[in-house]
Image (tube, rainbow, N blue to C red):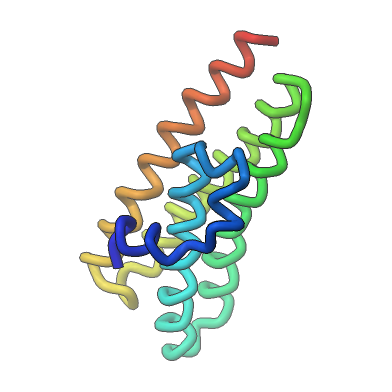
Length: 132
């Protein structure tokens, strides 16, 4: 699945949220859907703890982005974006560890998405810190 096909299937109610304009939020939700498929593959190999860790870290990315988005102060926004950044880095680590099950192609695809998320979050955190 590519992001363009996925975007066509997303419910309008989600797209109506102002947070939807944030590319990093859209990417993190896309990755969450991909991760659901990935963890299913991992669970078929009966590696439950790996699937759990991967799904939790990926899920935490969008959850903390949206939590930060809803905060008023830039300091609070930056704090939640930093937590999301940590989760993105953790997810990258768990994807690396699961590459033997998922395959190199899936791993590289997810790494590309996570790298984009990490770059966007780094910029957002820097911007929020400058604004105080």
